Length: 420
Image (cartoon, rainbow, N blue to C red; front, side, top):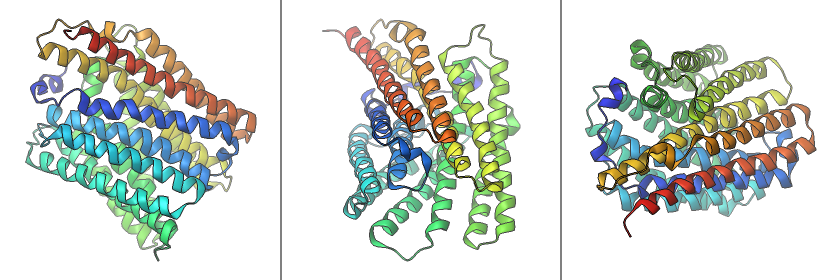
C-alpha cells in the first residue's frame, strides 16, 4: 500500500448513495449515445453537425463529467480532507439539475432548439455553481500537504473555466451573443480536456494508481509540478489564442501536448512495475486509456498539419472514448466495490470480499466490448463507412449497458449483505 493510501480519511466518506447516484445514471447517457449513433451513423463524418455535437456531449458531459462530479464528492473529504457541507442533500440537488441539464443540452444541440439550450445553460449553470461553491468551500479550507489536494483545486478551477466557456457557447448558439465563436470553442475544448478532466485524472491517479494497481508512487518531481505547469501553460495558451498570436499559441499548445505525453508515458511506465503478477481489468483499462491518449495526441498533431477532416475526429474519439472513458470505467470497477465494502464494514457488518462483490470476469468481458467499440469508432471515422458507424453504435450502447449492469450487481450484493 502506498504512502498516499495510508493518509486517506475513510471516516470522512459521505453516504454510499452520494456518489452512487451519479455513477448509476451516467452510463445511461452512454447508452443514449450508442442509440443515436445507431440511428445516424453519418455523425462520425463531421465534428460540427448538430448530431455530432449532441453525441460528443452525451459522452463528455453526460458520462465523463457526471462521474467526475460524483467522484469528487467521494474524493474531496477522503483524499483531500475537504469536507463538503450537507453533501447528501446537495448531491441529490446537483444530480437532478445536472441530469436534466445534460438531456436538455443534447436535445438543444441535436435538433437546434434554442429554448432547450437556454434551459440547459440555466440548469447546468446553477448545478455547477452550487457544486463549485461547495467544492471551493471544502478545498480551500483543506490542508495541502500533498499533491492531490492542491491539484484537485486546480481541477475544480479548470472545470469552472470550461463550464463558463461552454455556457457562453450555448448562449451564442441560442441567442446569438456577439462573441468570437471559433475562439471560445477552441478555449472550451482546451480547458475541458486538460484543465478539467485531465487535471482531475492526474490528481486522482497520484493516489489511485499506486493504491489499486500496486505500483510504485509517481515520481515526486512529476506530482509536484505537472498540474501547476499544465494550468500555467493553459493560461498562457488561452491568452495567445484570445489575442490571436498564432506563433505563441502554437508554442504553448505544443508544450501542453508534451505535458499530456509525459503524464500518459509516466503512468504506463509505473504499470510495468506493478507488483501484480497478472494485470487485472482496471490495469488493462488504464493501459488502453493511456495508449489511446498518446494516439489521440498524435492525431491532434496530424490535424494541425493536414486538412483531412478525419484527423480531428479521430483525435476526439481517441482522447474522449479511448482515453477518459477507458480510465473512468477501470476506476469504477475498483471504487464502487470498495465503497460497498467500506460502508458495510463501517456499519459493523461482515462484508463480502471486494472481489466477491464484483469478480474480475464480468468486468474484463465488459471492457473487451469497450475496446471493440473503440476500434469500431476509429474504423468508422477513418473509413466513413455507415455500416461501421452502426456497428460502433451497437457496441457503444452495449458497453455502457453492461457497465451499468455490473455496477448494479455490486449494489445488489451490498443490499443483500445489509441486515433485514
